[in-house]
Length: 172
Image 1: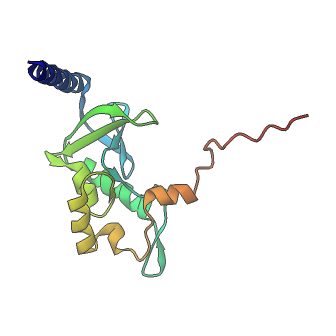
Image 2: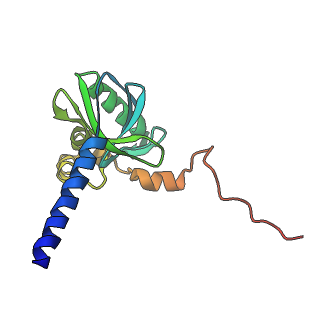
Image 3: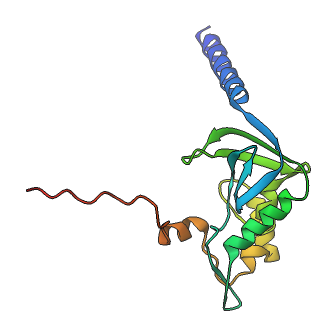
């Protein structure tokens, strides 16, 4: 009997968590504008494409021994997709910058997956099969002779206005 009560309680809690996620889910549609390769503006709100990480806007990669503006290429790839049809985004959480973490679609096709499959973004916790497809076909960042993952690039190229650690306090 205790196991039945425990299982019933567990089922109720799981159902409540699912309902809460549904209740908190934000849905938005309309025309989007690309900020960079994985961030867009829709209905005046910023959305970060969940499960992907595109090169930073200022990021430079190397292709055939020459500098290649892979960050700008990622932004342009996202902008072209946003121009190709109606945008629909679903989000139930925000990142540390307050952006909606979202899975979006353009014309019914998964935008997040497209960005990875086209080589304009790296998989980051999702879309592994799309990254393998892009890598095997040598698309986008996978055609470059050097393309740092964005997290590594951010670590070695801190933003000029990013807060730094406070200076150590000197005792008198």
